[in-house]
Image (cartoon, rainbow, N blue to C red; front, side):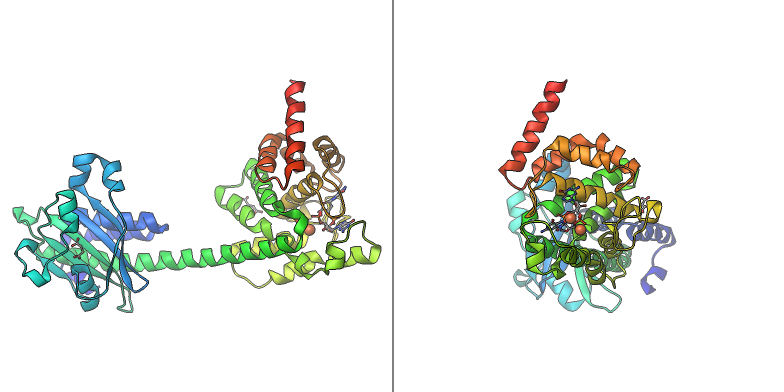
Length: 407
Ligand code: C2E
Ligand code: SIN
Ligand code: SIN
Ligand code: FE
Ligand code: FE
């Protein structure tokens, strides 16, 4: 970076440290706050606004003002900020910076000619006096404008009330580092959002086909997350299973209506076709580098394997079955038993628990059965919150009355 060479040595280390902090900050909101507070600190600016280019305009994403914090406290100062946007043209200072891709450094805005005046609405509304403005373009490595960093009212070097040449260079160096960090963060967030979006769509599509299970996938996701947390998974993996488990039955999209919606027990032939929903699901989710999709695929493929090796499609047993699939297996069956299906009524809670217990070490990993029992209050709460219909609500309520009477 050329500009760094011209910056006084004592600032270079500061800038490097800020650069490191920026590259370690991965959520956009904290990143923008950090960019603004660090650039204010290094230029001794009282206030500042950070704009990003969105929908071909400059949108003010975040603003900070020390004077307001002193006047009203952090909370009120923060709540004063209302997002606004300006066009990318010469009608505003920040707009000009974006169009011209160069710094504008104004010593005293009150002395500008009428046609170049900055917008005074804000000053008038808040009784604030803007004097010096330093507005710096944020350019990505391809020299495209991605935002503008606008700093206001510096204490200045040696008591001047305007931004010095050094401060201008520091702000520019920081703005270009910031641009890279913002772009990386946005790319990652967009990717994650796209993946989550796909996941939700797929899950919803499967749910929509399988009309009897309105809230099934949501409940199963919560149950699986509760179990994963209890066995000590870190938050990142808990989030992973929460987001991946909704796709466990996505392969049911490939099962014909006559079978999927059959009002009664399946024939052996129909059952065989039904069981392919695991393999169909894994094929739908096959080719993706994303952690979510990988986990979702594993879960779709193995969620009907059984601890004793009598499940499908592979007949895996014990710990050969991936843990995330063992977790979803118990969450899924607990929910299937507790809910109405086109082929069965919802079972009362004691019967559900009797079946789960009976299947410990047969269908289910016995350790996970213990965990489910330990976490049953949290699980029942989710069942209530995402209940399908009044009958389910009644069932959970009557169970709670039973437990109260037992005490
Ligand atoms: P599902 O309805 O989501 O059920 C998931 C799993 O919960 C079942 O996997 C089974 O392990 C368990 N489960 C559900 N109901 C009962 C029950 O009444 N008793 C016991 N002990 N376990 C139960 P499974 O059996 O591999 O079935 C996979 C899917 O196949 C089911 O998903 C459902 O969509 C369909 N299916 C299974 N049996 C029938 C049936 O008799 N008629 C119809 N129409 N569909 C069925
Ligand atoms: C602008 O004129 O750049 C927008 C408003 C402001 O000056 O703070
Ligand atoms: C964990 O231990 O946090 C995750 C293990 C797994 O994904 O199987
Ligand atoms: Fe299934
Ligand atoms: Fe299911």
